[in-house]
Image 1 (tube, one colour):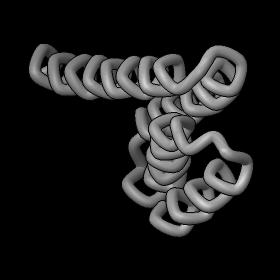
Image 2 (spheres, rainbow, N blue to C red):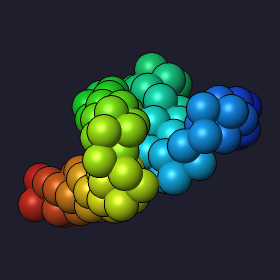
Image 3 (cartoon, rainbow, N blue to C red):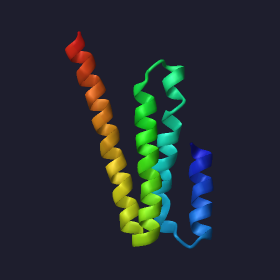
Length: 97
């Protein structure tokens, strides 16, 4: 994850779009969840990871086209999606008990 964040930072700065960094972080955070699904035998991490990564990619495109506020908005939305996935999983486990 840190390598992707650092590499992404270098890329967006070299392209003169440092404001895209929040979307790079969302992409990296999302991708880092994907292998957790198999490691912890928890399919939620697959859905969570790909959803957050997709929002990071959307943020990169949207931010490139519209400016850094769009990249930041996509990253915030990715955080809210993460919160929703985790809350739903926690609530579902509670109700099942």
